[in-house]
Length: 459
Image (cartoon, rainbow, N blue to C red; front, side, top):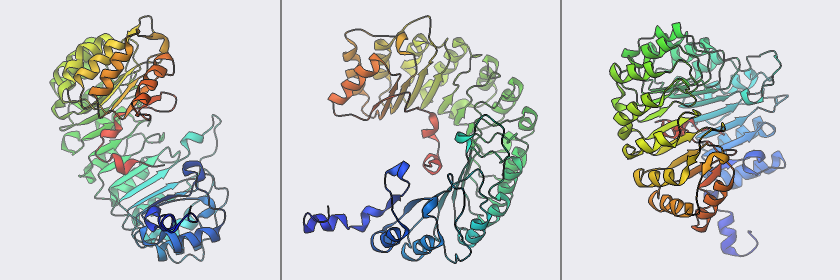
């Protein structure tokens, strides 16, 4: 490109193009053939423009990190991917590391101990505000393997006193002692996510919420919470506003106790809970404070009846921005049609189940209702099996109305089938090629509405 003409050369060599750089080929497609090439890029291309960089294991060396520290003074975001590592480089000579980092994400290996590297960077990362430690949850096989604590969380917490957001995702060795460690030193903590950390049982919650008075967001999806531990927390004295307890197997008694004592809940994700039934929803309405609730996810809560949901949504639907009632075969388009008129502020809707139903879903009428009642809609997912979707020759008109009236719609997710092809073709004719997607490649959730959503993004 730089050889075409002087103007193209000037554009190609503009350092502003190198503001955000991912050198992980499986993520960005960019691949650096040698360390010498990368060192040349750092000094010639990156310079003061670089703000964000992702490095794979083969490029994480002390020479590269020295160059980044010396040549990139404005580097604030860094991702280090050790997930495929079988052996670390030698960091004994490392004397420098970027000092202005606000955000750091470390993808952990299952078997490589990080202490040799971490010990060298502790003095440089005390300004960190956002920390992601990403485990190997998605790579775990069925067979039981020995678990190694590959990073020393207790030492790490002492080096990072200014953390606001901590995300420990899918780490097989993280338990409540690690949560205790962070809460004892990070007094500015606003958001803690321990999704898919199976050893977390909630015994640290009481001390966490007593110490971290600023904590507003607590995400504990797929953890093994024990109801007795959760009920010991003084929920009424907390500042908690956003809570995810999906698939935690909490009892009905515990859910009632918790939801009626949290004073200012605005985001609730409580899917896949057998204990979440009509009595919980009724207690939340009568004894709790759902007046500030803007997001509700009760995915696969089969013990909730459509009558209880109808009462709740009729009363509070006007204030909700995100509603997910997916994974429940008894919740069909009839309930949605009855409550759509109150969803004037809805930005996210998730509906349907992939189970084959005995009834059909009249998707044209549903799309028409969504288009006429949800002008602010940004994301919509219909998970129903394609065989259950009934649509006519006039379905193009309903899709047209949705496309024209919901101008903020960024994402429409459908199960792969005839209706998906019809809808995708309609949007493509209007030059909106990225909106319609399949459930195979995309899933919609209420997480977009979290106050710290941008800080929680990784990979």
